[in-house]
Image 1 (cartoon, rainbow over the protein chains, first blue to last red):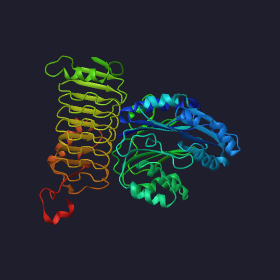
Image 2 (image 1 turned 180 degrees about the vertical axis):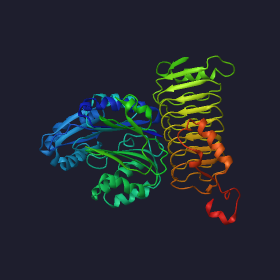
Image 3 (image 1 turned 90 degrees about the vertical axis):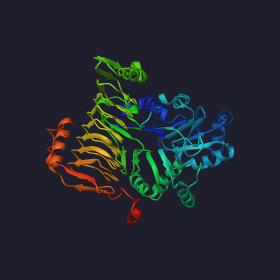
Image 4 (image 1 turned 60 degrees about the vertical axis):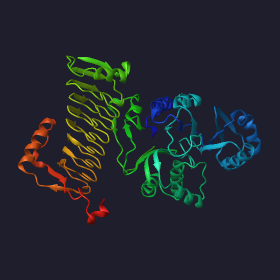
Amino acid sequence: MCGIVGLFLKDPKLEPKLGEMLADMLVTMTDRGPDSAGIAIYGGGTEGRAKVTIQSADPDKDFSGLQDDLSAATGQPVTVEVKSTHAVIGVASAAVPALRATLGTLRPDVKVMSVGDTIEIFKEVGLPKDVATRFGVAKMQGTHGIGHTRMATESAVTTMGAHPFSTGSDQCLVHNGSLSNHNGLRRELIRKGKSFETQNDTEVAAAYVSQKLDEGQSLGKALESGLDDLDGFYTFVVGTKNGFGVVRDPIACKPAVMAETDEYVAFGSEYRALVNLPGIETARVWEPEPATVYFWER
Amino acid sequence: MQSFDLGEEGLRALNSALHALKGQTNMTDWEVINPKGAHAIAAGVDAPVEIIVRGSTGYYCAGMNKQATIRIKGSAGPGVAENMMSGTVIIDGNASQYAGATGRGGLLVIKGNASSRCGVSMKGIDIVVHGSIGHMSAFMAQSGNLVVLGDAGDALGDSLYEARLFVRGSVTSLGADCVEKEMRPEHIALLADLLKRGEADGLAKPEEFKRYGSARKLYNFNIDNASDY
């Protein structure tokens, strides 16, 4: 069992409150996933600049002097904003490959959580309310976000085993369920050039979608291909720079509820996660159909 | 009427109060406000009382119900009225998966749609759905009646025993050993009564339905069917 929440704002007036709404939804899903929690949040972003979110088990050591070290090594102005065990690095988009290479040498123990124009990912082990407080999720702003509370059934309870998983620029995926053919798929994806941080099944699903996007498929098409190629139980919620998608396996035993108003589209593993959203009383509330891809894009 | 604010007083207090009604009571009218999708609301009630839940509920609302009439003025999450023994549960909105699962008696009315596995393994409950139902509904259903005014999804009645299934609209596909059967006068009479009790007598006529039941070919081991088991 795991909990998923997601919020895609249509009305820009709600953007300053995205983190506050998402944090409330996430904490409501604690009893579906008390092991770990994480969020991907899309917002801000400046033309020509990228964000690289990193994580360290020893942030005092790794983040100390990082801004100067990275600026010197890349010859580019770099910003570093530390949030607990994570830090968001701001850098010129063109300098991202150089920064990643340098980071591996300068701070070999640091893990990259996400790379993109607007995405930031924060995830840790612990109760969702503690994770949300640690990163200050309630104060975050943005256009859309996805959250996950994890009850591990398949791989270790670690920071890297928490969701969301990001395997491509501005992409992320969260999962409730378990896959049964991920080992075979992982080998295939490694042959195609994908690399993996964990033994987790969800990371394989994320990399599978990224691979399909690399091959030129649209996100909707990539998720449809997944219905044929991914075996097991799943409700997936995926995020891209401009969009937000949902798909459930054909058996659809993992729960999913959606709500839509003129202001937002919201996802929850249970209706409980949605009850404090504005206008929920009059929202269109429904369950996504099995084996059907849903997608919203701005 | 006893009014109970779930947000203020909590689920355990509500269910304890309802369980204490077993036997004789004069507190026969209850109202639950602020349900906010909470789980197990009014589960395990065993008294002839009326309970109105004003809003949508989470998992297992009205589970194991005996005698009570429970009305949900919203939608219901997974497993509503699961293993109901007797009484009536009426949902104004939609119901999530496995509504009425394993129910042994009583009447479940869903005025919207029900999703997958509605009436799975039902054992005597009557279920009336005003809308449509999802895939794998009435899987291994043993007895009782499932009435659907709308359509049914994939694999209706798979591995069915002796439950009767009545569908007015289309059926995407029938499950293993489930077949269409003749509507005889006794079925028309049964259906007329179920539609009336299911608050649907103005919405559909018994003659508009088709009946589905078990072909009874999977009951006993048959070497010729080995690949079907």
